[in-house]
Amino acid sequence: HTLAVGYDTFDCPMRQLALEFAMEIQPHLSLEQLQSIADALNGAQESVNHSCVSVPTDGTQPQTSLAPSWPDISDDDATHSIYVDFDAGNDHNNGSIHLPLKHLDAAIALARQRFGPQVEKRIILRRGKHYLRRTISITERDRNLLITNYNRERVELSGALPLQCKWQQVSGRVYRCAVSA
Image (cartoon, rainbow, N blue to C red; front, side):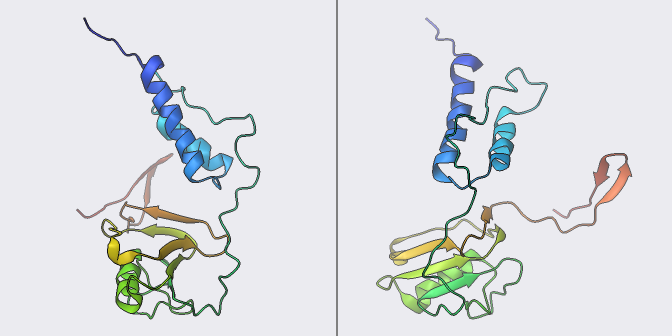
């Protein structure tokens, strides 16, 4: 006796559930960002189940797409905070708002060394995409640690590698870029 599970009874509902989970854990996502997630979950246009995930239009998405704000974070914040700015930071900096670190893993290491597990501390990520150099492991040594965005700045964490290349148009909408392995 074989149980047949089709795309319409399992695959599509699971994809829709993935979108709903994204909405739950990141309620500040805009409708455009949710549509991008839905498009990725749907897959290629030529696939048989290319349109089974859709962004809800029944008001379940918040009208504003603001990232969280923390009223106690200010530019002169000196209370157990380490700032990270992937675009403008340097891991040799001290982690202040004016001299932020570049990488999240460097900030976690500094928080462990500077504050230890008993002190309440926070790592504050500045706007933009933060590329992770390695897997981030939060352990018992990181008790009392909050990792958050700076006031209303939108932050993304990415496990991808940023491309360092110069795109060249081959023809029409076709571009190429040489990347090193």
